[in-house]
Image (tube, rainbow, N blue to C red; front, side):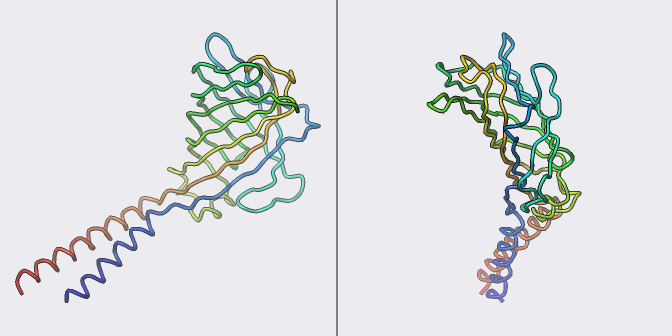
Length: 228
């Protein structure tokens, strides 16, 4: 009896491990052509910094090319409308073209394929022999809408979008002005989103049942052992 109970408990704990694991994957890779006249803009003022798509002012959609979507290569010429608006009131550090500012938060959308919000983003620039380059990073991304190809890639149904987090890694280039003296600039961007799918509530319930069953079996084993 005790051997069977032990096996059942181990099976329950193994099921818990499977149901609480997350599927992680690169869900979107995109970029702008250098020939594009569309830009992303950073503007720093007394109230902080605004980083958004489009020229200085209100965020507007810009066109980006897609090289990977849902883990697959889309047809040549596939594009999405990129829109984001991130703000930060954190202090800017650095000089000589090398600047960093953290604390960015805001929303983003790439057509109807990747939509969500982020926080604790970091905008940085580096000036070197080849001019200015830069990046924007956030490991606190929350997705609210994902396309069907991405959902299939992550192995979750359309109803399971809630609770999916991830990261954004963006590169910046073709700066104007080319030698910046602050975080006031326009540039072109490219990057990728990674997502980690958290189990749905049904999976969590299954995991909880597994734990209860496993612990119950171990308790019964101890009970029978004490009566032997």
